[in-house]
Length: 375
Image (tube, rainbow, N blue to C red; front, side, top):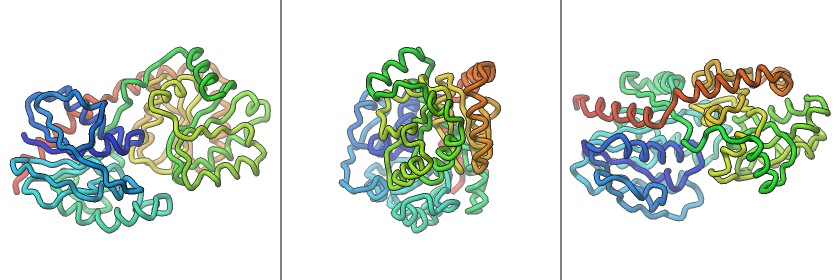
């Protein structure tokens, strides 16, 4: 096969779910496939500069837009007329129409349709204005969970047999490390001396950070003094709401907002924490719980959308709207060493069932299947 992949998110959107997905997909295809020929459209990316001879890079320059979605919605100019299949991983945004080959997109979720108030106006407009044409312009859809597959098929009446599920995975850097050493690094580098409860993810309202702060405030004062709440994520427009909520509840000294944390430090935080709490209202997949589980970290997460599919029986799953239940389960994990150990063992076992090698192989199977479709 001669396959083209829009790889721009691997560089421009690294650190997000879509950026991680694109990067790891290219890296893993490079490991498992030495037969098919790949043409990757992407800017210079040091972490992907040692690809095999069957991978070629077509350099792409940034348009210096203020938004990733503005940047990638300008379609790549594809000059390779021999291409048989073209794959756009970032929800199909930026897919080229001027090529005579089959096309497949990765549509991670349809959050803008389900919770439009939680995405930027720019992304919502692009999604609403362009997605119908994108779907009409492709033969297949890859998505990241059975939940998303059913959601997409129902919303767009897209044939289920042409929607392929390729679960995501934790990167190789996420693994058990010395808790003591990790806590020392965090103390030295971030000034966090206390034990802590962790949240990792975006600051979108759908992530339910307000609910997390409310549930934390219901913990006994003695617990909050011993265990801080550390919230990792780039501070966006919603940050002021979260800061104000912690101040109004009188817990601002116990809630730490780190802002952006570099990728190499994320396994350190996962290993140092007592528990990851992920009370999101909606996820197409949700990588942080899986990353935490790969580190052997206990997880409390929502019981909605794709999260139970990912975590299965290895995490405590709660109704994200039930603040009291969330608070109760946080305290329960902190107090019960046997429960914590059980969750650690289950987490490591569950996370081992996901790998980027499997994601790449499932993607390759989807490519082959799409190319077998009759025109």
